[in-house]
Image (cartoon, rainbow, N blue to C red):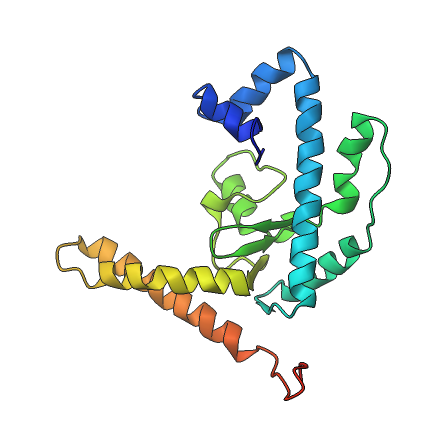
Length: 208
């Protein structure tokens, strides 16, 4: 999925418009290929959990409506030390124990909860099938599943100059300028809210 010979690499190799097409081809033949993907997905989830939890322990600040849920879920999976598995079926069940449902996106993080997911609501309203996970193309800033880590805030900082340039570009169409200005303003608000609740650091280096 994210490594050489993974799902995305295979889809690119065969010029498939979607990884679902690749999975369909793979499922009709040697199923051991899909078994390898199950193991790879589990590895990805556990590596992400370790990285996120380490960052929290090292003082990464998190803001947004689901910040507390983000910390709670990570603290739960941090206690998962792994287990020996002897079959792929067991590997496929493990993500249920190890996956906290945290999805890092473009300058935002989703702590997915289907009942409150704006992307799911919008897709259902349009008569589209709702997947079990989040859909970034339907993500909305009003969603209560959102969280902003320091990494997300750094990404927002890097995006603002380009948005502001477009917003003040007299050659750009007015709708494009208006959207860029709105995105820049929204990003600044998120950054300000994030920093406003950052824990103060005492002289000894501990959070006050």
